[in-house]
Length: 303
Image 1 (tube, helix red, strand yellow):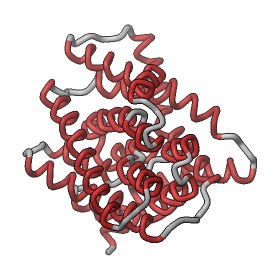
Image 2 (image 1 turned 135 degrees about the vertical axis):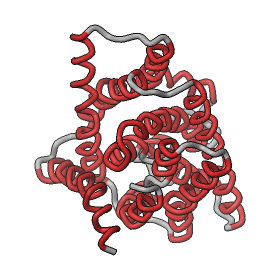
Image 3 (image 1 turned 90 degrees about the vertical axis):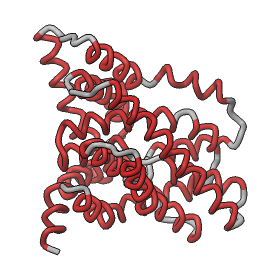
Image 4 (image 1 turned 180 degrees about the vertical axis):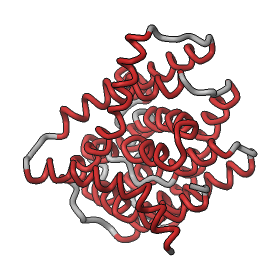
């Protein structure tokens, strides 16, 4: 028990503490999280992704295997959730809400900082690839699911041009492939920006939780919570063993797979009227429960 407490205190407690500061800022000072969200989205996050990929030792096989693994994981989670939802006779809107909450995790604000604290920069580089793929899928597949067919796939794909981390990932891979280096002044600027990403993500996570309310349906909530916090990391762990993935990759992708529901899903649910009250409840519940599942998961992964 003391070992698990040390894991929690050293890795999860800093995240909860900084997120708590963000919560207090938004709750009692009334600070709007949107400006910080935009800065993280357009500046800090892309800088972090680019620096991690550019300075990593990732091979082409590492990048492609992480990409393939992540896509397979999302397909398996989505298919399993859909089957269980159909067995439980969820209506169309409820099933759409459960799918987006079960499939899309908080890989950025929560997953990247925790991976960094627990496993260091090598695992963080793989986690950043997972994060970008998760964001792409959220903004394409997630939109299609949440809209229940009212938005075309083409429209969703067009929205990707607004996602700067995709360009950062692509540019980082180019620099990595050709062993390119930035001039010292630009490199130091990039380092400063990327260093700001994780603390700002954690403050933003707390600020975003202020407007979430604890309401929802029992059966869908049990399915979402179980899939997001227990089943998804178990599937991810099994897939890494099946494909013989190295330890840093396994640590990154399994930990990311066990993250709570992405806060972005509340925006999708509100925009397309896909049970927004339920979705916000799922975000809050899985975030509050996550320390109970992530602490033993860290122990399993060798933190």
